[in-house]
Length: 136
Image (cartoon, rainbow, N blue to C red; front, side):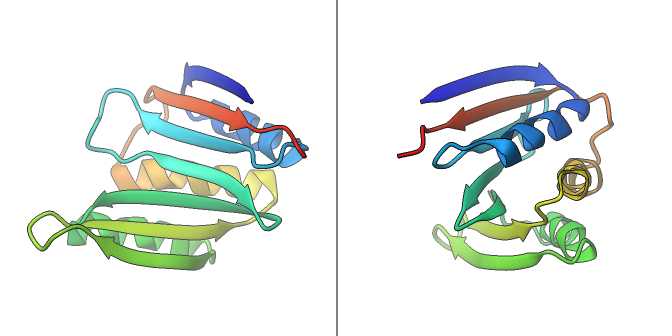
């Protein structure tokens, strides 16, 4: 298994997505987290069944949920799974989307998740964790 970590800004999104798309690994994945804003959920990207997917889990908040949904809906991507977990006092929303395979489109969508969904600036420091398992 290979693992690579890097701190950087939005410019690294495209780099890591290109690595994922070209990978021959069984299931390459990328987790992107905001270093300074812990309230911003991470975005987990992975390949499954020949498609690139984005998964996010966040505390239920109507305003934030609406904004995040609008980012993906505006890009015309397919919502694959939508679930609420937790008890009534502490619920979280799980969203899974199927993303476009073209790197520029996926890069723009991932950047929009952080910029429009969470109002982060382009120079916001992000933590990128890339993993891949060898193909079997």
